[in-house]
Amino acid sequence: MRSPIRNSARAKNDQENLCDGGGGRPHLPPPAAHGAEAEYYSTPQSKLPFSEAVRAGDFLYVSGQIGTSKETDPAAAFKAASHSAMDAISKILQAHGSSLDHVVQCTVMLADMKQWPTFNEVYATYFKPGHMPARNAFGVTALAFDAPLEVACFSYEPAAPGIPSRGPEPTLINRY
Image (cartoon, rainbow, N blue to C red; front, side, top):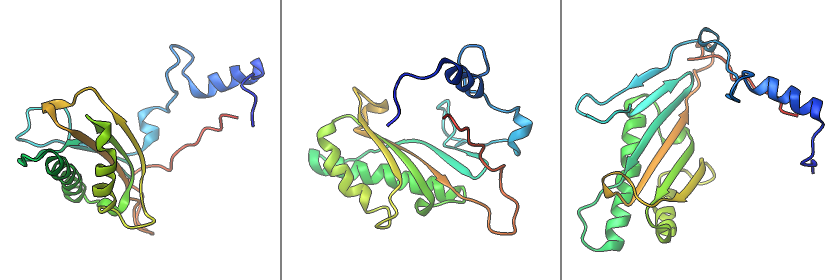
């Protein structure tokens, strides 16, 4: 295990590699070095100030989708809302050339963490066994439109062999 105390020369080198030298922001190459521009997919009928999805290279980022339900029983309502959010994610992925099979990460926000086991039960049905995305789940005080949950995901959809990639290969920064 690494010691939390680090050599000051090494720390300075890490800072120079990871930041722009002012304000501690991550260092990124100029936009031209990233390849193709990001594509922003908005829903024309939506008046909300965000895109439903953004494609950046081989990644498709899907904005958070809230779950809704008309059920009156609280347990049934949460389960239906969970399906509603996951179905919306699936629909957006498909509309932009991806699918749940290519999801690599999801973030789940729950208005009531006691619902975590119920959400997990529903969530697991949307992915193939042994092919579960990385995931974050956390409780929140409130969600937009008083929703009981919100789910955001991103998928990785590399170009087929022999077809140019949608973007450059990721640049990895060795921090140690």
